[in-house]
Image 1 (cartoon, rainbow, N blue to C red):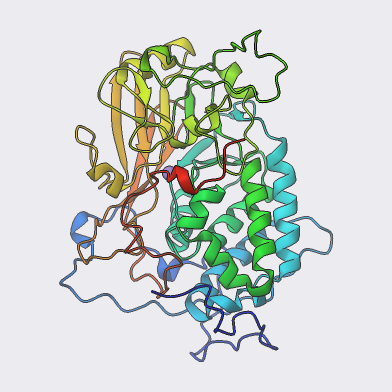
Image 2: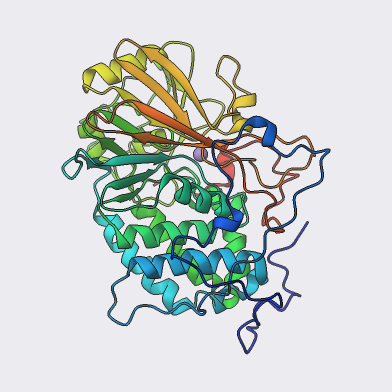
Length: 472
Ligand SMILES: [Mn+2]
C-alpha cells in the first residue's frame, strides 16, 4: 500500500519553486468562467448503456485543463468573489491531474488555507444545530440536496455544473461525508467551504459521521492532509477537525423537508436522580432497551451539543450520534443500531410519527452507499444513487448518495458501478423530490489511497469503540 506517512519520502521538504506548467499545448482561451470542466463532463441523462464496463477499454483521458493562476492568493480586500471560487475549483481540478499531491501547498498556500477555514468556521459555528431554510425561498428558487461525496472531487465538480452552481435562486444543502475513502477529500471540503463563505445563506453544509476524528483517522482523510501539507499537515488537520465541530447537524427546508446525514434521533429523558446530584462522577447510563426509546423533538435537537470531535455513543449527549449515524429499517420501531455500534434503527412507523408530529412531508438522509446497502436485506440497492425507503401516509423517506462508482479504491475488480444522485426541490411547496442520477467521471485521474482499503474491508462505519477516546 501507498504509505502516505512514510518518513523516508521527502514530502516534508517543500520544493523551492512552483511546479512547471504541463508540457502539452495550451488550450484555447475559455469562453466563460463556467466552462472549466466541460472537457471532463458527461451528461447526467446518459443511459446505462453508456457506463464503462470492465471489459471495454477506458476512454482516453481528457486534455488537462488550462493552467490556473497559482498559487491561489487570498483576496486583498478579504472578500471572496464568484470568480475566486471558480478559480479555486479550476486550480484543484488542474492540480489533481497535473502535479503530485505533496505539491498541493503550491496551489493553496497555508496562509490561504488558514483564511479560508477561519472564515468558514466563523460562519458555521454560529449556525443552529438545525438550519431553517425558508425565509429567502421564492417562486424562482430551487433547492439542491446532495448526499455523500467522500473525496470524489471530479464527481462533485460535475454535479455542481450539472445542477447549476449555487446562486441567488439556487440553494444547496450538502448532507455530509465530504471526506474519507476518496483521494481528494481536502479539495472537496475546501471548495465547499469556499462556496459557503461566498454564499452563506445559499449553501448549507451539514455534518456527516465522517467529519469526525475517529473516521478520518481510519478512512484516509488524516493521512491525506498530512501527505499534502507535509510539516504543516498537523496544523491543517487540526483546523479541519475544528471546522467539522462547527458543522450543523440538520436542516428543515420550506418547513416541509427534514434533511440530515443519518436521520432521526431519540428523545433524551431528563432524569438526573436526586441522590447522585452534585456528585462528581455522576453518569447517567441510558438503557439501550428498545422499550425506553422514543423520537426526539426539534427542541431537543436544538439543545444538543454538537461541538464534539466524535459524537458520543453513551452518556447524555446522544442526539448528534443519532443524527449522524442512524439508518432506516423496514421493521417497525426504534432500536439501537447494533451493526454500527452507535445511532438508531427506525421503522416506517417512526417515519410516519416524525412527519406527522412536525407537519413534514419528506425526510432526506444519506449515509448508505452501495456497499452498505448490499448488507441490508429489505432495503433497495444504491445503483441509481437514491432510494425511496419508506412511503407512509404523511410522506416519504429518501436516501440520496452522491458519490458514483464508489468507493474509489476497491480490492476487487468487481465494482458496484453505482450512479450518484442529487435531488432538486422546486417551488412552491419544495416537498416533491426531482431525482437526477449521474455517472462517475471516467477515467478518474490516477491517485493512490490514503488508507489500507484492503484491510479496512467494507466494515464501513462500524465503530471500533475500543479505539475511540472516551465520550465526553
Ligand atoms: Mn456516512
